[in-house]
Image (cartoon, rainbow, N blue to C red; front, side):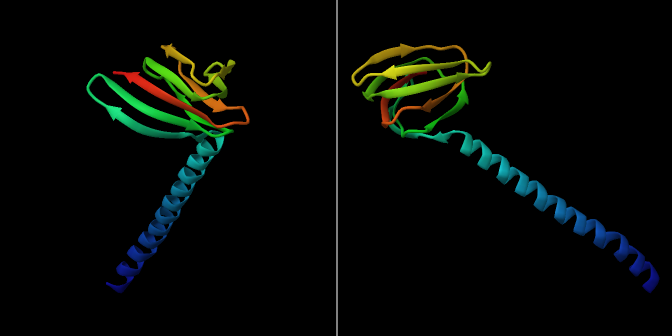
Amino acid sequence: MKNSIRRIATLILPALALGLIAHAAVAEEKKVEMSAQKAAVADGTTKEIAQNDKVRVVEVTYKPGQGSPSQQRPMRVVRCLKGGTLERTYADGTKEKREWKTGETTIISEPRAYSTKNVGKSTIVYLVVFIK
């Protein structure tokens, strides 16, 4: 009886230890991956102003160096409250700089996904109305 318990223990304990080590390694890998994504583009600040079943209104602020990750955005109306230089990067690597002037308003319906980054020296602030 004691021999069979020892055999089971010698089989189970190493397996449990390996499982715990593997779990810790996977958790650490996920942390590193998420940190790398955040380091790639520090997110700007988005503050919801209002929302109903047709539109969502937000104020978006990008400090120098901040931006947003790559995503496809719905059609929207953008009013620049404080201007600056923003760079879009598309999935194919194409980059496009845009100088926003304070007070400028535009309708954007870009079908391609892109990331954004404030490449200027000043903070950029937008009022954005997303059409649902």
